[in-house]
Image (cartoon, rainbow, N blue to C red; front, side, top):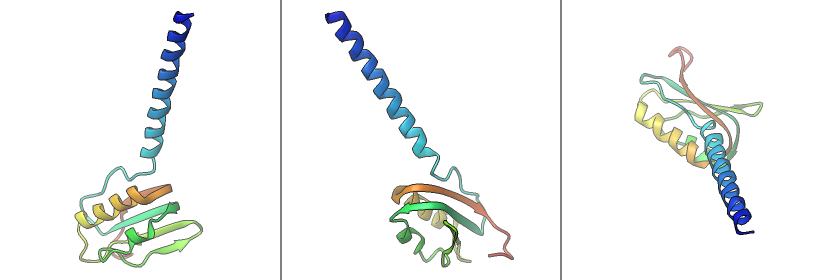
Length: 110
């Protein structure tokens, strides 16, 4: 009987470890993977959930444009990579759902 309890404990611990690992990996997919060194930058939120609006209300960003569940915000002319990273980090911390992508845009479009 003791051997069975030991095996069940090991299996339960393994299942818990796998669940935690998958949960961590799932959270990584919603975060930006890299920020290009040179701008102008655009941050695109797809189906954003949570208190993210305070993040894009930043002097380094222009007014957000919302269309069909997608929000795009472009960096202001004087913004730096550090500014965009600050906004992206804020989004990563406040989004409870959706995805974040950071990229560059053609200066003519900015």
